[in-house]
Figure 1 (cartoon, one colour):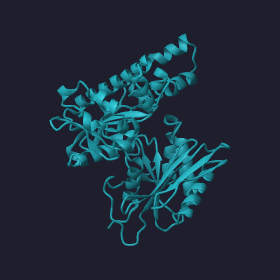
Figure 2 (cartoon, helix red, strand yellow):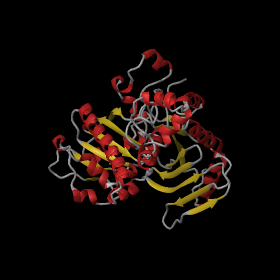
Figure 3 (cartoon, helix red, strand yellow):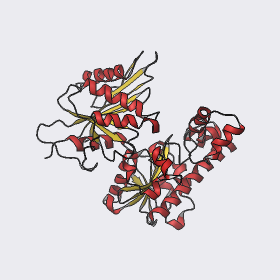
Figure 4 (spheres, one colour):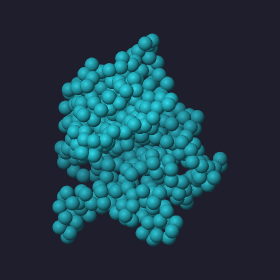
Length: 421
């Protein structure tokens, strides 16, 4: 296939020429859902956002919120047969707000694509060759790439004249050296089946590492950051001078940290043992490790707020689950400190990272010799903005940096399609 169209750096928003369209619709298509946001890249303002869920069921629901002044959230329920019907419903809601997909102000549609393999290292304008390559990667992302493809093809049918841009979760991690990306297995086997560490949550790690540098008053190229993306899915990355040099997720999003329902790191022989001794099938092991492990497997809850409530009430099972979660997190902080050699900041992000003060405090506790500490009062403050929560004397800044994957996708999309000034 032809090489992907190169993009400008993600944080370099080009100034549009006079009268040029400046809006970007961001689509995140899951197997039974579509999340979307419409942004105006002239000032980064969000114009609308919403979610279509339970696509293909009788109980489908679309929740749409116009974000202009005075806009009120609207919901519609009832069967939405497929992604094509879902996007048509989204288009109707946008049109009702004067923001329709036929608007000349729409510059492009940006699509989140989970797996881009090694081929896609930048946001890429989608054509038939790109679609074919995304499809070729389905075996390494069977739960995500098919849904992403459906969303792309549906959007292309609705606006065939409009640039459609793929922004890949894996792209930010393609800068990892081979020493970090390769597994220690037979090279020929690994290459034949594309087995290596790809990493995920890349748009979040890119955005947060750059915003952390901004918070420190420095350029991304000057800063080494450990990013901890802690949501129901969780991943860590080591970012040296704006480039990822290691990340915790691997061939799939199963590797790494303890997550809401995923095990994270585990001895691979456990799978053989379960098949031989417990008589479990491959599918049963898959379900166990991806859906019945992590926090929910350890204590029956994957909501950190509920786990903390139980811990405070003396629940030993919840306390053990929390301790295992923190132990794994602390190990990755230490490992990535060693990988980077010098760390300027540790940044917490995503639902747990941004909101669970107890997680941040526990993850850093005992790491004072590494220059890490948390100020209890600063850590307790609830805020939607990026902030430093370490004391002034700390050698390494500890920060809370809210992620914004939709804005990152919109920025990368617009930088690729906007006319040069």
